[in-house]
Image (cartoon, rainbow, N blue to C red; front, side, top):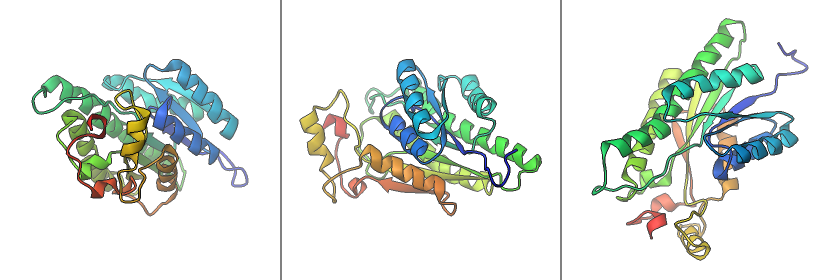
Length: 263
């Protein structure tokens, strides 16, 4: 056990942290002094590189593979991280399945895939963090508290008919955040962070991305740094729970008939 003069470093599990937005979140938290457990599914080399970058900033990091379509793998993940670092204080659920379907192509299989990865896995990880903190409290740690941050999407407040199963899975996660905030208090806080259009994809040219990124009341949507700093704030502010920070330049205040990737 750490002495008061030498507190134990805080540890956060960031899912989907090997690449893109998850990587930026991992690096920002590492720069803030967090030990980062980098979760990935298939991007092994990217995960190794993210771990090295985080370790240079915080002094400790490690990578953990898990397929979020597999409930047993999800349930084993947080205990694996605890086994490596000794304790976990927070979970950032950034990993996300994002595959297109709509009212015409919708089917049970696609919905189930999105619900497993985007809704079920974050709930199981919140459940596991709560159990871990309860055990620490029972062992005598007076201030065993933690937080879960769930990455959502501004389109929940500005809906369109594209990516039906993805949107349903994120809407379910947003509702779960409210319920978990009540069920897991006071041990665990649960906060949502909802970005706007933040990164381009193979569906958008750079020129089109820049055009769409400017479609907001502020003339700019979110950057990876904006989203990561919001996550950092949510983890630090112990009065936040059961709410969502919309970090999107105000895009949720506008009406879009299609998803950005199809505009």
